[in-house]
Amino acid sequence: MKQYDAVIFDWDGTIMDSTQSIVRAIQQACADMALPVPSQERAAWVIGLSLESALYHVAPDLPADQLSAFVARYKHHFFQNDQTIPLFDGITDVLSGLKQERVSLAVATGKGRVGLDRVLQASNLQHYFDMTRCADEAQGKPDPTMLFDIIHGLGLEPDRVVMVGDTTHDVAMAHNAGIDSIAVSYGAHDVDTLSSSAPTVLVHSVEEMNDWLSGRLVPVVR
Image 1: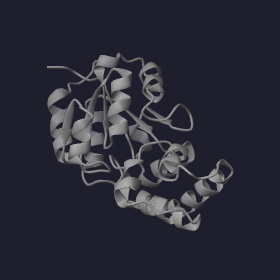
Image 2 (image 1 turned 120 degrees about the vertical axis):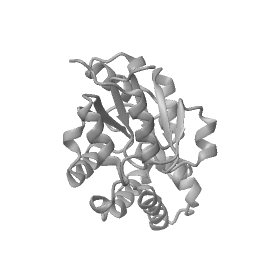
Image 3 (image 1 turned 60 degrees about the vertical axis):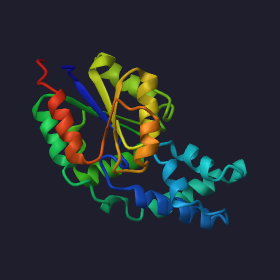
Image 4 (image 1 turned 90 degrees about the vertical axis):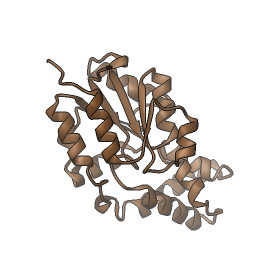
């Protein structure tokens, strides 16, 4: 049975239960800018992309000189409560169990560095992760650069790494990097959408993800 040396997690919708907070912030920012307010489904689809790419997808006709104002309105709404958004139940136990098995852990997220550092500190999870990469430090999803940076930075082989995420953007990034992927259906994208992206495995809860990882992982001798 295949062994993984590292698990790379997405953040929003995978570790933190932030989908609805992001959707509301996008919708509120659109209203502030007098733009058509996207549906829940459309706003959720862009989660995982870099912020600028996400906002472009929900407002493709926005003049370029208004993008910075649009970004500022989104951040205004999202940062009002980002440090109180809960983690998914059981996710801390997953991270703790993997660390006990001496598995390397990382984050590859569409969040910016400032945003990720805020929620890492607020959630007190920073000590679990050996490396993190953000969309403002490399090309955003589905470009594989963030994954390549982590794989090379931790001295790993791609076939011993798996990506865990809740969107097709995560699965596509994993495909582009040549690594396995675990799609979780409890986040932004629904089961049918995730299935169409052909992840290595599709799970429906934190518990199921943990059970699957536990059956595939063994301690790494370092």
